[in-house]
Length: 183
Ligand code: HEM
Image (cartoon, rainbow, N blue to C red; front, side):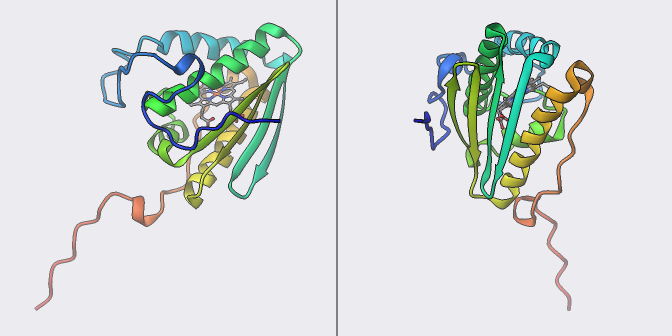
């Protein structure tokens, strides 16, 4: 099976519905002004939550990330899954955040340039491989794969759930003030 691969995440290199979308917000603090796709993407997300009963998902964690297969016997839901993953990948390529109030999703966008996403549609859904070389980002990927599995399990009541993340490693933490020189 051949995976579509995009090792680098640079603006303008998005695939699928993400491609050619307006640049819009780059993660600023102005709500979703200028993000014309936000409502459409949220509609798909709500529809996915409403249809979790028809979704099957398997995840295999790998030392560098995870591989998932998420499918539905309902062709409409299968198409939604495919569209959602492509749209989200497009967002990550362009830094167009979504669900920024949830620490895990915020971190995924912050570390997007360290994440490689490969996907291949299947007749009933989509197969995704996500990888990173950074051990902290690999932890985030594992947590994200669990979060999506949680969404499928919980359905609409999972929408409100926030996903905490481990503290970032020292080198990516905000710079600390220098200690004063001793005499
Ligand atoms: C709370 C709303 C949601 C948001 C903000 C959201 C956002 C995202 C983002 C940003 C990604 C790309 C990042 C990544 O793959 O690591 C992603 C991937 C994915 N999402 Fe969502 N999503 C939401 C709900 C859902 C729901 C309800 C489903 C299915 C029932 C779903 C299925 C997937 C799948 C299959 C992937 C590919 C990665 C994987 O298999 O774990 N998402 N989502």
